[in-house]
Image 1: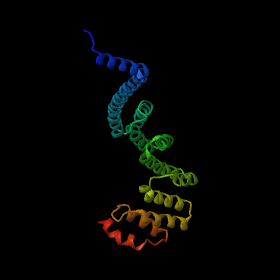
Image 2 (image 1 turned 180 degrees about the vertical axis):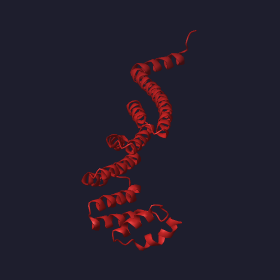
Image 3 (image 1 turned 90 degrees about the vertical axis):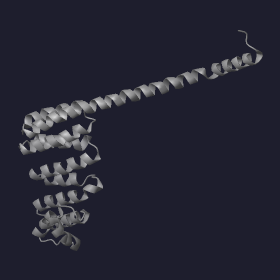
Image 4 (image 1 turned 180 degrees about the horizontal axis):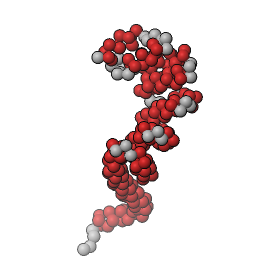
Length: 223
């Protein structure tokens, strides 16, 4: 079919446009389609990883229930290797640390907690460092525990951090500093925190005096 003059002009204009911008448009489309494909691949990969890690975590729970520390450590080693980027690996390492501690396997407990402290998200890092400080306290590694507690924690862990500092300082017989730590712990606790009364008891046991608001909250905590 013959083209009329207007159609020929439009075709010529398009050819000129494509000659100038065709390669750019093609590469933009390739990049866009490639990004979309990569996104879909990553999403599917993450979903698959999460499902596999979840199944392995269920096996871990069975091993924990059976108090089989050796099996727990093996499962968590696999989870850390294969699913390091999942939250299941972090939760599993914390569970493995508890199992190791109860089995008096302090080396494994410390290793699991240190891994979470290094690799976990901010919340799990804070939890791991608190628990690791507790293990160090049991080992009488007081200076190391205080150094760890002096590091970065999420603000919502301020009460627990100061409470643990107080415990370490009492063990070092640094009573005045321990009182300050316990008072700081109480100040950081909400009135309905179930741990208030215990911290107050520890403070008063070393001759400290709890702030008035802590005393007022004590009956509620005991109820």
